[in-house]
Each structure stands twice: as C-alpha cells, then as structure tokens.
Image (tube, rainbow, N blue to C red; front, side, top):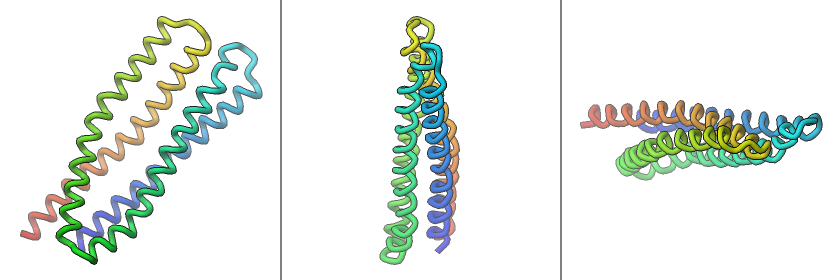
Length: 168
C-alpha cells in the first residue's frame, strides 16, 4: 500500500507542476496580445507571432501533461489492485526510462539556447531576434519546470527502491 501512496503523491505533485506550464503559456499569450495591440517598433511587432507560438506550445505541453498525470492517479489504483508486484515493477521501469529521457533533455535544451543566443548575435533582423529571444525564454521555462519534475521523479525512484528493500 505504501507504493500506491508514493505513486499517487508523485502524480498529484506532477499535476500541480504542470499548472506552471499553463501559467507561463497564458503569460506568453497575453504578451503576444500586448505586442499586437501596443507594439509600435518593428521589433515589438516581430514578437507577436513568436510569443503566440511559444504560448501555444507551452499550453499544449501543460494540458497534455496535466491530463496524462491526472488519469494516472486512477490508473495507479486499478493497476495496484489488480497486481501489486507488476505495478511496482512497471513503476520502476517507467521511472528509469523517464530519468534517461531527462538526461537527453538537459543536454539538448542548453544547446538550443546557445544556438538561439548565437542567432541574436549574428542575425540582426527584428523577426529573428524576436524568435531567438522568445525561444530562449520558452526553453528556460521548460528547464525550470522540468528541473523540478526531474528532482521529484528522482526522489520517487529512490523511494521505490527503498520500498523494495523493505519488502524483501
């Protein structure tokens, strides 16, 4: 039963965390509207589309993760009731897989940030500057939220391993 409680608490924390994607998505969307309505300079007008796209991407990520993790809570209870050892094993495998994915994410996103920063330095058109700056801002948001999610799943994985030792 302790494993089910751990899994449920982790999923609830993930549901809460995904709300930050939604918060930042709305912030980007509001910024896009602001640039559209109030933008006077070419650079300000150039931000309309990139901030809109970033807002929609963050909204998609946030809603996808929200519903995925929300449905996991009920799935965890059903899977645990059906076969607790299989549930435990599937959670170990899922967390190990997710931790490997985070290793890739934390290598790729900084590279993308560097590329976007280089674009700012070498391409001087307002559109590319706006795209690069918005991309950097969006990737920083993703790193912030994923950093906390990585920490949570790492802790969850360690707790699963400890629960395994207690069961043996």
